Length: 364
Image 1 (cartoon, one colour):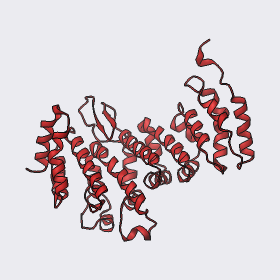
Image 2: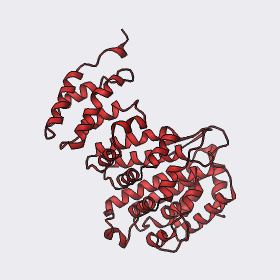
Image 3: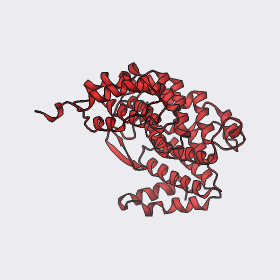
Image 4: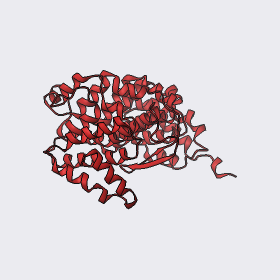
């Protein structure tokens, strides 16, 4: 007998236990029942269990009063082969928002795992882009969740969604290439472009774009508008620093401009015209008096420049980079030293090209 077809033992007991949890939301789960079943799950035996177990888990999560970690872990495993649109037939937008707003990290991660499914195709990403309340809840949780793992998951999910949905030309002209950024390999296949709806939701929706800036910004508006505490603000800024180089590689123009220049007057200490998220993150977001954040900013510039080196040449790109570097280097000798030394810390076969590129954008 094929081992993949062996029945999952303990399903009847777990099914009955789920019924008990529905009847009594205050009941503590029997963790062993969940663990025993989850450890047996594979691609072959999951599908018949989805209609049996997942609706009950969803019902429990709506009213559960205990730590939902074991429930969420099993749900993520069961949802593995399920598409984004199929999930939407089982869990409403409001249920996903509720999971994102939950104080339980496991519920946040479950919701993000579902949103991640929309990155599998431009069509699914476009569907998600229409759910502005869900996107708002996701952005808020991504930047405000105290658990590092939730922030890292959110960074990956948002990056993948915008990658799939990007309607700009790929980084290479039909040629497979890849680079590594923050430990994540970014492959650039000759893939069809997306519809750009997710990009428009994030960068052209006034409420969503304003939310991103407000959660990453410090200043008088912070306390007045329910901004983040100092420690969480540091985490939020780190998440923006981590994501932005990837977005700049996908569509530099989209994050170099904004439809809402009045936000720059609100969240930026100096007048910056129609400059977009890139300039906010690179020039205005970080307090350089905070040594740790200044080091994070330097890491950002190293990753940003390394990735821009492999993107196609354009006058717009080079002009943007020269101006950005000129502004960033003013009075920042630590950054200047790090950028000058960066080629010495890269792989030898790329060092000379990187050195020439840095000299060009630093106008040395």
